[in-house]
Image 1 (cartoon, rainbow, N blue to C red):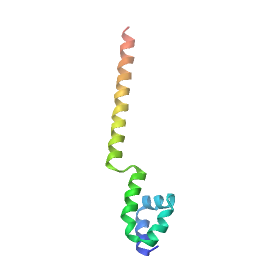
Image 2: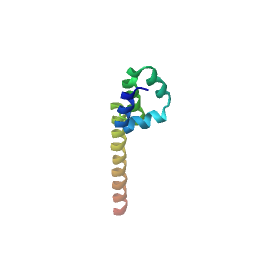
Image 3: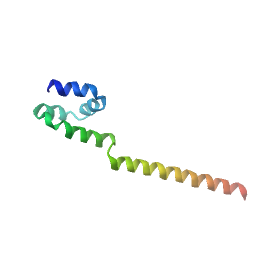
Image 4: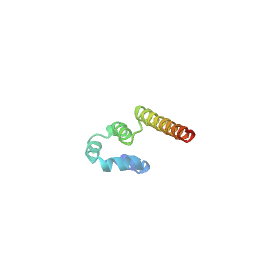
Length: 81
């Protein structure tokens, strides 16, 4: 693998972790260093950093908070009876 790519991976511990989890990228980057951007995109999907994944995560958090509020309001109504 090229020295520049190794140095870049040393500055990005998340990508270094990803490449250790997906060892095929060692071979692919050694053969074609221009695939670095493709690897970064796949790492973003792996770590859940894409826009769609962030929206889904936020939606699930809002849904959970809504369920907790509903549950607490039901608990409050039960005490009045």
